[in-house]
Image (tube, rainbow, N blue to C red; front, top):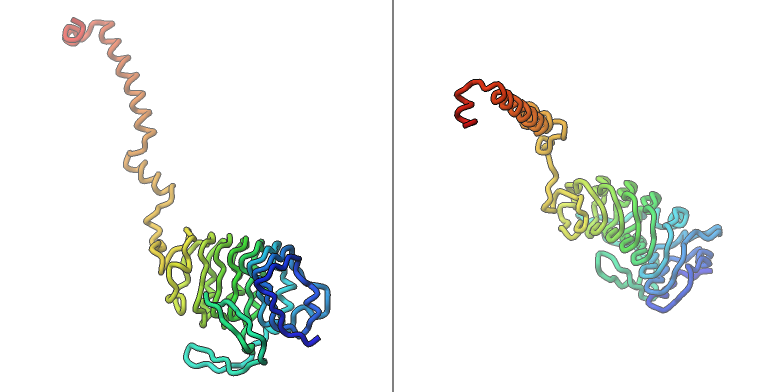
Length: 296
């Protein structure tokens, strides 16, 4: 089968994932977004998988379960970087596969219309589904990826350090999930990253500093109460003395006599002792001067 492009987006299709499409070894564009597809996605048992796929868009459906590693690993054409020319900090696509029927791809927050497939362009959009579990480490093998959108799912766990291998990535959206841990410093390897959205997760720690990270605004990180550092107003503490450990604070209180326990004990003992001495004085009638003054 020579079928290379399937675009069934923005319809009312209601079914599970069409695994039989993996029998199309030359399929380069698969767009199923904005339908009512549901269920799990797993690699169909064929000898092909999706070895030629460049654009994979199944966003805004009801797919669930985890993102299977073997499924991602079948995207062989997204692993092979083809040489391209670089001018300054910009890459120009100098080669094209062939003309196709117009296909729209959402990247960098905008919609691009392709009439030809750039040989160095690969995009994955799984946003707006119900995927859960961790992001597969093998996603770092897709070194041709220019756009990756996993937003608005239920993904958890830490962000894989392997994603730092996506050195030509230009747009990354992991927002509105349940991701934890810190932002990998390996992200600094993404020299061409122009759009980053990590908002509304549970990320913590210091935001990596340097390179392209200096160009991202607060919106890239909002909704992560544990993050600190530029460009956020929450600065990371550089001095551990500002927050001494509990044992140190307690030692200071005891050293200068401010601990409440000895004070309470002394007060109680003093009261008992005073009452006892007073009773004794009146009982024996001495000294007479005090008895006359207070006893009448």
